[in-house]
Image 1 (spheres, helix red, strand yellow):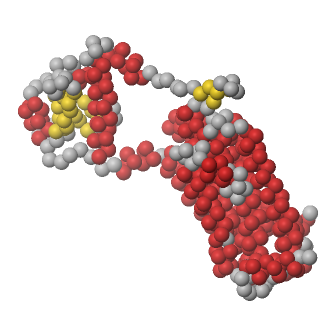
Image 2 (tube, one colour; image 1 turned 30 degrees about the vertical axis):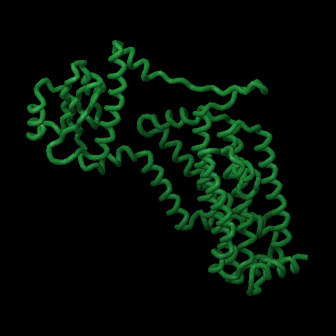
Image 3 (cartoon, helix red, strand yellow; image 1 turned 120 degrees about the vertical axis):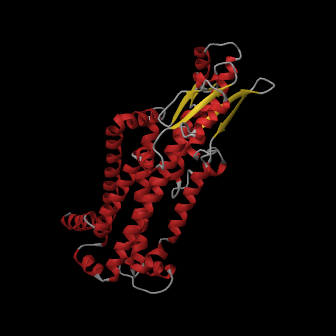
Amino acid sequence: MNKFLVLFSQSYLSKLKAKSFLITTLIMLLAIFAAFMWPTISSWLSSNNKAVKIVIVDQTRLNTAAFFKSDNHLKFKNFTGTLDQADQSVKKKKADGVLLLDQNASGQLTAQIRTADTALELNYQQQLDHYVQNVNQLFTIKQMNLTNEQAQRILSSHLTLDQHTMNTQQEGKSADSKTKATLISYGIAFLIYLFVLSYLSMISSEIAAEKDTRIMEIIISSSSPLIHLLSRVTGILSLAFTQIIVLAGAALIMAKTMNHGEYWNSVQSFFSTVSAAYFIYAILFFVLACILYTLIGAVLGSLVNKVQDVGQAIMPVTFALMIGFFIAISGMNNPDTLLIKVSSYIPFISSMIMPMRIGATDMGLWEAAVSLILLAATIIWLFLFSLRFYKGSVLTYTSGSFLKKMKQALSLSK
């Protein structure tokens, strides 16, 4: 146990204090901070922070201009003069544009934005277009002789389509719940791809560096291959989980404290429709994926003689991760395809796909349990194989193909 703790602390603490780890974590923290601060940052970077002044010339005779409400970006003002007078106010820089509202022969609303020299910036055009679309709906409703309050009530009403299965007498997930779960699953798949690929390379490079400098022979002679394997795998996993906890904790603190807690309320509202079982399974799949690929990285790192060969060794695993990630992306539009169903049971990529099926379909949780058991069984088998294989692979310095090195490693481990 003492030898394990010594090797574990050496692997964990040395990388925890490494400048590369600290800089990478700091960059990720800054990226999270920038994401929360993006509305403020985008306003700083804007070429013009002043609100755009729009004068409205309403020729509909139905007081349509009253539907336009000013905000921090667009300031609306009803112009009582003629269109020519409104144009002159724009040319004299008293306003940024004239919004002309009128009706065509069939009584439908028409809208035109008139500016002096150049058109409005794209973001203002998009906001104004959104306003006009909403006002057009209100205008159509008003033609039915409804009051403004009745019109707003119709437009703000929202109906959720509930799912009910008659044979099982169960309530299925709503479309909104499935959509949110799909987005969360995409984030999980991306995190698995990002973290696993990073730490897979890290553990492979560490073991390959120890072989390259012949330090491996000294370590193995004073302990055992089993202790060395366990110390390196647990050290890298602890480092990965430390970084995840730091980043997740920082994100939660920022969400809670920034913008008067509005981000936190948005997060709670977003995750409220997703079940607790989904989060439990998602966390389990994420943890098991990290364990699986860390073991694979340790085995592949023990096969190479030089650090320069690590990239070639882990390339097949990288392709497997890419395939799983792209399959997960393809399932965002339709997670019920045969490809998604079959892939969700393949242990090496199921961690990126099964969480999407759990949240975005009405599958039984027993299917997720089967996939989880298959993944756990694969890890156990790989661990037992690694214990035997590692004894020979760490002391194998044969040049040649990986197949030749594996055969020699297996023969030495007998």
